[in-house]
Amino acid sequence: MKNKERETLRNNSDEAGEVRVTDRRRVYLDRDENDPITEDEQPNLKPKYVEELELRTQAAERKLQEVQQRFDQLRQQLQRETDETRQRLNKAADERAAGEKARFISGLLPVMDDLTRAIGAAEEGASRESILEGVKRIAISFQNALANAGVESMNAIGQDFNPELHEAVETGESSPEMDGKVIDEYSRGFKLGERLLRPARVKVGRSSQAKIASEQ
Image 1 (cartoon, one colour):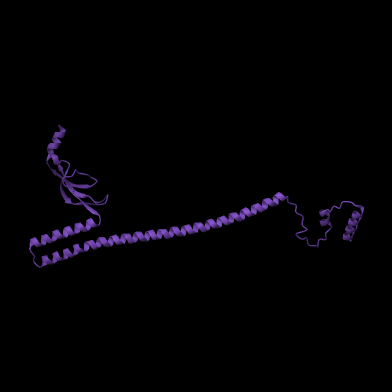
Image 2 (cartoon, helix red, strand yellow):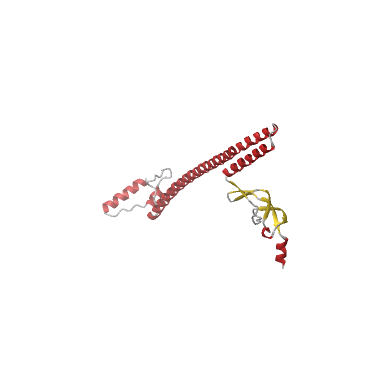
């Protein structure tokens, strides 16, 4: 009944030449509660600039998600590459250390052979001179093996006593010119490059004449 009344009003308005105005609020008030409202019929009460702002916000959120996903992918890729590089470097370092160790041990094997021959000669009753000569060759062979590994021996006798390189075992009377210098060496010192492997155990000279002269 209500729909027929609205149709009659619209016809009368057209015949009178009046401007027709549709009050959507009245339409929704007159609608039956059981009639569904479609999206096309729902009124859009948002201003246009609000809709544009919402669209831009949604686009920005999607762009941000894409950037975040790309960032996560790059981070994971970088982490994998870093782990792989670290593993390669560690493996290369281990192989290099193992190679240097093998070369050093190979250099010591001739020393072991010489020691074995010297022991055999002593057991067979070889002369003292031949045994001594064999021991000297063993010492030279061992020194060569150390030198090939980069180990350098330090000659301390005649050098000024240096607590960073020498370990003073005792002191002894010496001439004034040898005062404060190493006059005897009990064990040789060694270094590897700039690293001290072992200080030399030495005897340091002390001159009573030099001490008297300094007191005067």
